[in-house]
Length: 151
Image (cartoon, rainbow, N blue to C red; front, side, top):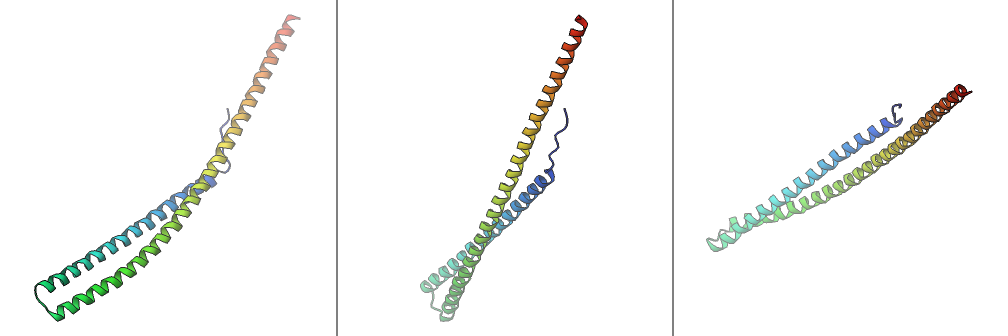
């Protein structure tokens, strides 16, 4: 039996490497999105702390300066959170783009694998046909030899 050699194996290898690269890119985009979401959580906690300080200052003592600084801090936190939400939207778009690239890479690799499977099946059919021809030749030869010996 001869050895099966897929003539487009290098293309399959390239497709597999492209898929791995797409997986890495998707993972990085996903990690960036998570990082941006964590930043937003941190800003929300900071804003909440400022609001707590504002509530406590109303209860304890009335320092106009501290209240004004705290109000400014809360407004800045709102602004930072708005910017951070925009960064999250950008990161989500990037994740979606990378997911689509990964999906396309997986699909291309699967197509190449299916082509390889089809080529292997054709190779096996050809091998079976070759083996069948050899068996027929051997049988014919053996039958012919017995016939010659019988004459």
